[in-house]
Image (cartoon, rainbow, N blue to C red; front, top):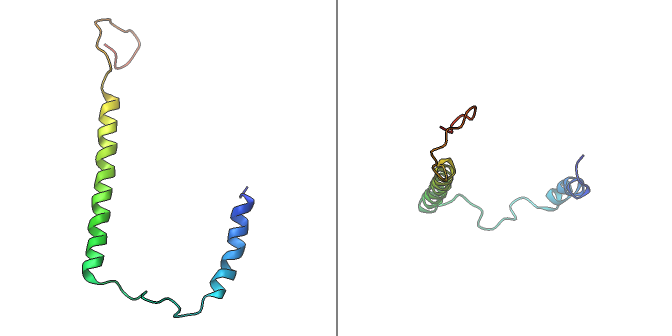
Length: 79
């Protein structure tokens, strides 16, 4: 079931779109090449940062927290 707020938003979206006149956006032309290249580079850096953080967190969780000399039977990965 969709929450009532989302239904209201979906119903009002065509009304808001009809209120906009074509060409009313000032400065919405194509982006300059340096600005576009900067946005792509920033997106790549942020994506790489997210991948590195996830990789580091996954490696930290995969390490055993303590080593003991006990032999665990029927416990895969422990002994």
